[in-house]
Image (cartoon, rainbow, N blue to C red; front, top):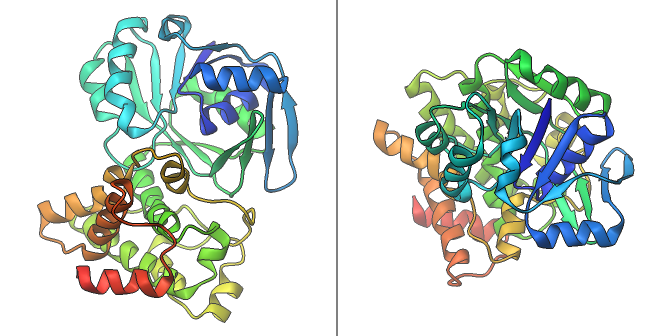
Length: 335
């Protein structure tokens, strides 16, 4: 079995290096800039919030999409906005029957691949943790969480290899439930990006959590209208998460101890996108909730306002560093 990691950035390099360590045949497919950085560093440096720290050498790296022709399985770790271009490359280079796992946040990014690549076996996957790309080929996993893949026997070697590297990996039968359950947590990406502070520091402030709780309640209402049961992605059932998130600080710190066991410097991938002046995936996260809510007649003022604010930052009309109070006032105006 040969795996090509298509879009070897933060998540892709981290997963590819972990699989390589367990003897899985892997090729990373990414930008020449990342390839040069890894070469100069002498390998891929992966670390995590629980103390793991390894330098992984000799992982094959390509920057031409023709490398996709070698794949039995493709892990697509590109951003959602790159999926249309990715679909064309997958259709052109991959052999019929190649399995393609689309590992993007949010909802809908895999649709274009399914439509343009009927000859491929396309499924969705989720990476439930944050990886920050630091300097010198260093990729740091800063939060808890698992990799979720569709229940396919072909993915068992991936699951087993990741488990050996202390990375939880689950094969899921009801992936829609998992995708919506993960989206419930990803609604915080925009809040963290707007706050411009580490995740731990943000979650310790009730004002930011009140906004997150509101966004989560809107998602729950939309999911209920669609008949979707949210998968349990944390120690608490998803129905209880908005109330826990909104609890007073002293109670939250006691009940959500596991949630706060994250690297002190970890931030959301959306924060990283804004720092790099890249367009974000807001359309597939809070935007997906707002779009589904509009179709179903479910109000989503919190998620709509978060989308507006992120777009304003993207367009240079607003700075980050919104305090919790400023963010709550924007939500009130938007509602």
